[in-house]
Length: 475
Image 1 (cartoon, rainbow, N blue to C red):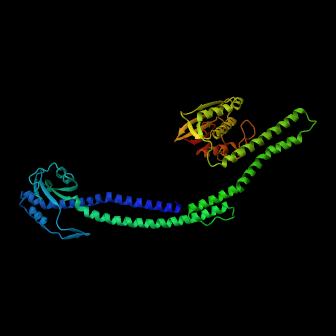
Image 2: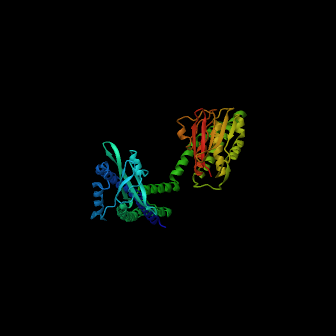
C-alpha cells in the first residue's frame, strides 16, 4: 500500500473516530442537559403554584377552591403550540398538593388524593426545609418512563402549611433531544466529508515531496551528481537534509577527513619520540643508554599500534546499524570475567574490587562488545584509582533497565573535561604521571551502549572519585 493511501486512510479513520466520539459525547451529555433545563422550569412552576395554593390551603377549601378549579381548567386547555418544529396540543404536567403532614389533598390526575406522600423524597425533603425533588418510573414495566417531580413549600407568615409538587415525564424532552441529535449527526457527516477532502489534499501534498525525495535517492544510487530538490514540509525537509548528510558520509568526505586528522594528530607524538630516540642512538654509546632508547622506541611503537587498533575497532563499530551474534548475557558473570582479566593491573596497584549484582541480571546482546565496554571502564578506573583503594562494580535495575556502574576513589574528572570525555582522542593525564591513553576507550563504550539501545555517562561522585554508568535495556 502506497504511503499516500496510508496517510489518506489514516486521516479519514482519525476524522471518523473524532466525529463519532463527539456525537457519542453529545448524546451522553445533551439529554441530561435538557432534563436539567426542564428541572429548572419545574422549580419555577412549583414555587409559582405554591403562591396560588396558599389561600385555599389555609382556608381548608383545596378540593373545592379556586386553585383546584384553575388546574382542572388548565388540564382541558388545547395549547396549539409548535416549539421549534415540535407540536404540543395539551399540558403534560401532573400537580398535587399535600398538607404539612404529607397527606395529598389534591391531585390533578386524581390518583393519590388522601394518600400519605410524606415518605416520597419531593415531599419529605421539602417538609424538612430542603430542596425537594425526585425521579421515579412512570410505569414499573418500562424503565425508560421516568417522571421528574419537583416540590415547593407553601408558606403562610413564615410557617410551612403544605407542599406543591409539579411532575413532568422526562420523555417530554425526547423530541427536542432527537431533533438536536439529528442536527449534530448532519454536522458530523459534513465534518466527515470535509475530513475526506482534506485528507486527499494532505496526502497529495505530503506524497509530492516524498516522491521528489525518492527520485533524488534513486539518482544518488545511480551515481548521478544531483542536488537536493526543493521540499515542502519541515519533517520532509529534515529527512532530505539527513539523506544528503548520509550521502556525504557514505562518499567518505567528512568521515575520512575527521579520522585522518585525528589519527595524524595522535601519531605525531609517538613518531616524534621514535625519531628522537633513533637519532640519539649511536654504536659507541653505553649499552644502558642504547637499551633505554630502544625501550622508548618499543613503547611508542606499541602506543601507535594501540591507537590504530582501537581506531579501527571504533570505526568498524560506528559503521554498524545493528547487533550481530546476539546471545543471553549474564552481567554478573561478565563482570567477574572482566575483573579476572585485569588481575595483573589490579595487583600492581594493590587495588581491591567489590562486585554487587541483582538476581537474574540477564540481557540479550553481544557478549564480546559488552565485555570490551566494561573492560574499558575498568581500565579507566584502575588508571585513576589511588593505590590500595577499592573499585566498586555494580549491576542494578533502574526504570526497567540495567544500570552498570564502575566507581573509583580517584581525583575525579575536572569540570572542564566532563563534556568532552566521550570525544575521540580526548584523554587526561594519569595521576601517577604516566602518559595519556589513546582517548578511544570511552567513545567505544558509548558506541557499544548505543548499539544495544542504551547510553553511557561519566560523572563525579559527591564523596569523591568518578562513576561511569552504562544503562542498558532489559531483554
